[in-house]
Every structure is written in structure tokens, then in C-alpha cells.
Length: 111
Length: 112
Image (cartoon, rainbow over all chains, first blue to last red; front, side, top):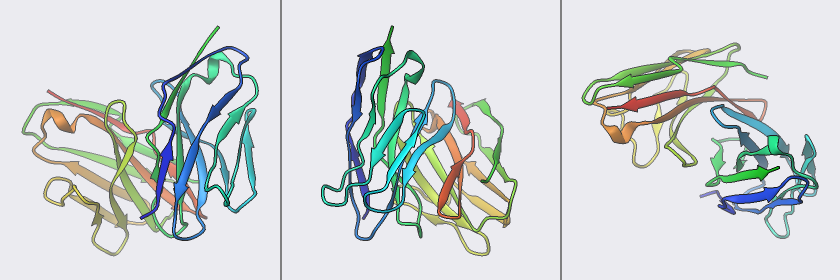
């Protein structure tokens, strides 16, 4: 079935460093791809999404591009802040079924 | 977008007891899901609960342990039965609407 493989981490960066969290997927159809963020003690929030190949999702300085040729949806941010410390989940859905999540990547940004 | 509320937000329960978690959505939705997030882990789908049909359980989850009700298009309950410490998790309700999936704030369950 459909699945997501995500760089597990944990990832520790200094403030203003460049962030990449890798995510690749396996799907039989044409899924929609998502990044969710979970801040400490809080629920899951949608960070960004892309619904078709070559789409770029962006939000709060984060970006991810839906790459069908490499089946990837890597999350990037040019300059992280301490407030970005959270767990990030890559996910997919084929629009007819439930959402499948990666293992999550814990990001810690140090001042 | 759909706004989801869950009750209770957290609970501490004794081994062998049961807890029913309620999920309320502010709009009518067909597809509703229950997930579990064990400490430090990702989300795992427990079951899909569509109104008008029996819930469909994922591998490793059974109705006797996690009975689900879906009486209408805005409400569902998940019961965690005969609890053990291994059931300590966050339980999340989720709905699909217009090709997007929304999540409730979760119920943090601790079993002692």
C-alpha cells in the first residue's frame, strides 16, 4: 500500500541554519502530499501541501516541491528559528482514503 | 475547514477500565478516522468510521478493544476497552473534507 519514508532525525541546528528534512513516498496512484507540524504539547497542524506533480507548497518560510520523478517531497527552510523547534511529519493521501504518515522528524533549533 | 473538538482532552485511568473519547465536528462529514500516537511515535490509523456503515479496522486493531460509534455526520466515539499501560497514547480524531484532512487536538491517555 501507499507509504511515506521520512528522515527520522533528531535534527539539531543553530538558529539561521538551512533546514532540509527528506521525505519520499510510494504510491500506486497520484497522491496529495503534506507536511504537518506538531509543536511541544500541541496537536497536529497542517504546514503545507501539494496536490500534483511540480506543485510547490509553502508556508511560514517552509517550502516543499512535489517531485514525481524522484517520488519526493523534501521540506526546506532557508533560515530556521528557535520557534521552529517541533516534530515534522510528512504524509500522503490518495484522496479516497485515509492519510498515511511518516515516522516524524524532531527538530531542535538552538540560539 | 472543519473544526474538531475532543473530550476529554486528557485522562488518567486504571488498568482494566474503559474510556470513551468523544469527537465533535462543526460540519457534516462522511469520512472520519481515529488515530493513535504512542509516545515519541508517528500516527497510526486505528479505524475508519463512515456514517451508515460499520467501522473498518486496520491490522492490529479489533472492534472488541476499540469499539467505535458513528451515530451521525458530526459525531463519533472511540472506546478504549480493558486498558493496559500499553494503551497510553494520544488518540486523535480526524475528518476528511474537500480532499483535506483535519485533526482534533487529541486525547492524552495515561493508563496506570
